Length: 172
Ligand SMILES: [Zn+2]
Image (cartoon, rainbow, N blue to C red; front, side, top):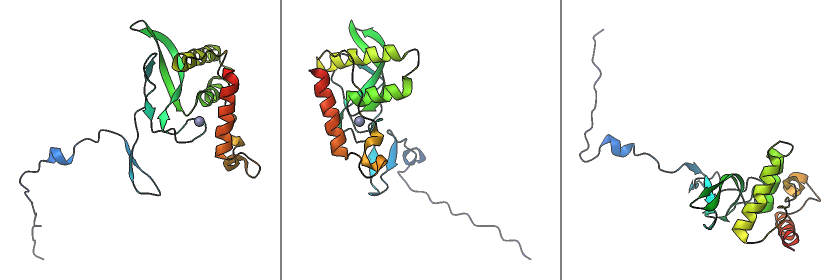
């Protein structure tokens, strides 16, 4: 048996450097299962300083799973001052303040710090909307929607309407 060394093919392409091929992806990237389309998700903001706009965000609501597509409410914690303005660290992203309140109840209800979360929610609500509320009321349980509850459950539209009613009631 004769030994034949394997041939190696080295292709040299001028003008392309390995570093260019391995350029880092700047944003996390995922594929929509149905569309096979690349979606770039925005980074979850870490802080909100009162007086600033709530930046729009293209994530799903952490409470009701709808696409937010606009300014996101959040669970505020760690109130502090930035240039003499009240600021909060942000947790989560929600389509509405009642959705934030519902998720806060799920996550922190019964814990020692829940009272301060409830207080911060009302304060952030006031700073974001200019409306004073004793507390941010909770959105209905998302499982009341037909997609969880089955026949007889609310449609997404009805759920959204219920949240709007809650906001109106709260601001009366
Ligand atoms: Zn929501």
